[in-house]
Length: 292
Image (cartoon, rainbow, N blue to C red):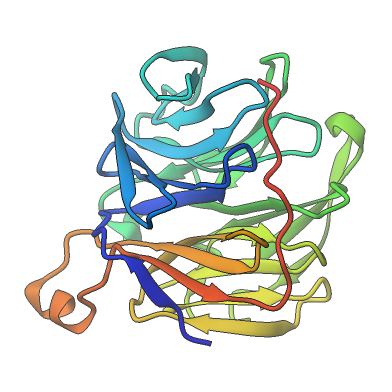
């Protein structure tokens, strides 16, 4: 399958897309643009400026959203005008920032951080993965991470997925009720399961794992036993995140990265930073809502 461009929006770093079950609209961030976008019914985008860069946005049970700023998790109202701090994250080391996140089956948020040292070759495993419980308690799940990505949960809620983009392995963890206990199990797939490296992810209604393959120009669907069962190619080489949406949750939306490209790169991939979509044959499931 080949994705088509829905919006030539030219995000510097599009990320964290999801379809809001409360209004059926698609939301995503442009991290470097310090803003959030909403795809409206007329296929136009509404832009919401933020007070800082946000690695993720996720919906709440209450009106509004949970936002992951560089070193802080906050909640905001439905119009993204008022921001209330919940907790600070990794104020030291300053080289990291909050990145990917997912609502867990118990109403909390699992999120990871990212070493954003400018030269990718110099990035170190100084980041970590955390859980923010519905009562606001922050727990570190594990560290030794360079670029947190690929967070998602199985439909039943007993399996958590995670990928360090630098390493490329899609890891799995068995999770007990309310994160009372959890432990790592066998990985879903290694780094060479598809072109590129794993970035943002989502699990569909049948338990398949969709992975955006940054630097690979595609998104792939992995069965629970780690086989590639579908692939969506894009006219850009750096897809960043996926979300299943549309009226029947059977459209795969994909954000992408434009970054600071040379004129030669942009001539080759002029739609870099766009929002893309492709139909799929297995629908998604409604986005979970955070209880924060």
